[in-house]
Length: 197
Image (tube, rainbow, N blue to C red; front, side, top):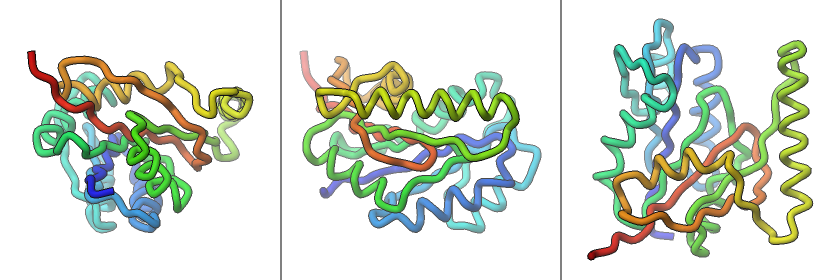
């Protein structure tokens, strides 16, 4: 497990939650090698709070592509600095992970998985939309538990793993999302080895 894990947290006005999110990453049993909060057109104190809690902060201005634009901004800067075996963990800025999540992700990547994801759970509240979200997450976790393969490939992970692989490998690599209990959601992706020809 001699590879780096870089956590990217795209954030838009997440001052209320970013301290908990960054603190939870810094409290992991395997702490990411870098925690980068991408403050996307923020008008609140997200950047200051994230920095105060030990994250590196990058800011966008005028990004019209929302979360995808913020991630692409960060990936353009991070991917050229990574080795083939290094990993990128993408996490929502209002989510937090179980304390062993990054360690389990690292072990699965070390076992040869190209990508790792986890079940996610919604917090209480949010009215009818919150209830729908909790039901959706419960259904997803139930589907993962019923998987006979021990892991599942899901369209929910494709955009993150595709973005993280972009520019690093000229060909797609297999992607699997393994069942790892997590509070919040996250995807970690290890780029494929480069090929020639």
